[in-house]
Every structure is written in structure tokens, then in C-alpha cells.
Length: 349
Image 1 (cartoon, rainbow, N blue to C red):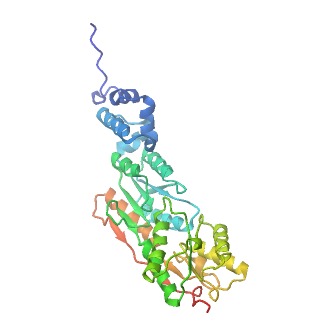
Image 2: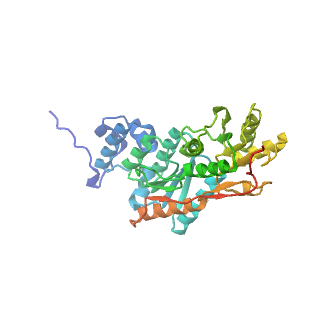
Image 3: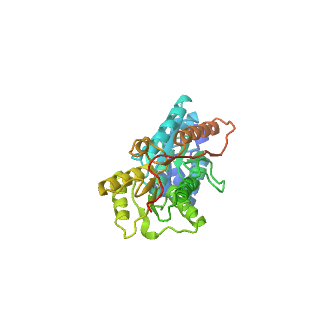
């Protein structure tokens, strides 16, 4: 019997292992190897681990990643955000990029449109392109995302919220506390019938927490949020106007409306002006994030100042520290503050 020809070994320095070698060792097809290397988020975790273990054993390096693996550092950080259209995410990302740039890092951006499966795919593609670390928005994510990051040894930080269970490094603020405090302000003015305008809550922990803050404050006062007075909408001025118009058309409209961001609040104010409803004489409206959009309305919008810029800087500082082996604070919570303006007042008798 003719002896089997020995397989070339990468450490011999003569022949680099190829995708076929990895596929044979892992017991998968070369197409699966390609998917693991190019879109790892689309491959089952067990299969992905087998392929990665085989690749490590054979010292297989995909052509696209060879340069970054040789240098061990690409000096690129990936950020996956829900939407580029939402100005606040853009401001946080700008602060992130500024601080990273000061230390010689570049930022690579992707958006997932509030689709957590898409977020997982985007993260896999960024890893394939050699980013050293990743930054995400919020606490809601596909569980496979963290397995992917662990498999590839990529540090990450979550932003716009602080993980209450301390499982994942995070920087942000208490979203529930923001609307809780502003609802207490409205209760102190004498309001008892409330409306809520919010982004959809599926896959969006910020919207869920802000809605919970309203409900918790009302419950402490012995009140409840009428389901008819809750409107969910995409984050845009026209959608907010339409949501507010529906609230105004109710047989008993609310006398106070808590919007979970300033875009919703300003859209609600526009709808009130178009309907001849006075603010705050007929209805009080509040927002979250204290943007220039709300501050320049007439009357000015009562809102919550949130740490939009601070989050970006803190996320960058943490990522840099982890990549450079420096000490860092894995859970950083910033304070919030109610900014009182003319859009809130006592309810009409």
C-alpha cells in the first residue's frame, strides 16, 4: 500500500495552510470556512468554534486579515449604531471618533436599523475587516453577539445604558430614572391623565426603560397609564405629529404627555399648534435629551439633560485602555438633570 502523502504544515515555512485544509480538519465544507471568516455571525456557534480551532491549529490566515494579524493591531475600532438618522447617536459617535483620533485610532461605522440580527451580521463583517474592538448602543443584543466577540477575542463596550447585572462593560445613564423624574415633576404640578409617545420597545432597551419610568412614577402616585394614551412611532417629526394627533382625538385626551426623546416632544408640540391646543395652558409636554431642537421651541421644551458627549468620550477611553492594557472602569454611569422650561404647567381646571 502506498503511504499517504503527509499534509503540508504551515510551521514548515514552505506552504501556507488553505481553506481546504481547515475545512478537512473541521469536518465542514470550504464554503462554511468562508462564511466563518467573512460573515461569522451567520454561522452556528458550535460550527464556528470548530472552524476557528482548526484555523488556529493550522495557523490559517484569510488573505483579507493577513496584514492586521501580522501587526497584531489594525488601530481601527468598529461602532454599530441603530441609525445614522438620529442626531444624538451621531453626536455620541462624533465624540467617540474625536477621542479615538487623539490616540491614533480610526473609527469604522455601521448601522443596523434596530434589527439585532443585522447588528450581529455587521459585527461579524467588522471583525473580518480586522477591527481591534467594537462599540454598541444599548443593552439589548442577540445573545450570539457576545459569543462571536469572545470567539474572536475582541473587547467591546455597550453605550447609552449601564448593565444592571454587570455582565458586559458599559457606559451610559439610567434611562428609567430620566422619565421617572420628569413624570414626578408633572405629578407635582397636578396632572393625573398622562400620555406617552415612545419608540417601539422590541430590541430597544432605552425605549422600554423610559416607558417603565413613567409607569413607575404613576404607580407610586396611585395612577396608571391608560393604554389608549400610549403611542409608538419611529423617531421622526412627522411620526410624532401623527402620534400626538391621535392622542388629541381621544374622547379624554391627556393633560400631560411624556415623550421619550426631544424629537417626539417637538413633533407633539407642532401637532398641538396645528390643532389650536395651547402649551402649557391646555397640555404639558416633556422630552428627553435636552437638545437645541427642544430648547429653541416656543415655549421652550422641558427636558432631561443626558450625557450625550460624555458617553462617547468614556467609551473611547475604555476601549483604548483595554487595547493598551491599562486599568479601566467597566461600568460608568453619568448623572441626568431635569431642565425646566415653559412647556410644562398646571393642568387647566
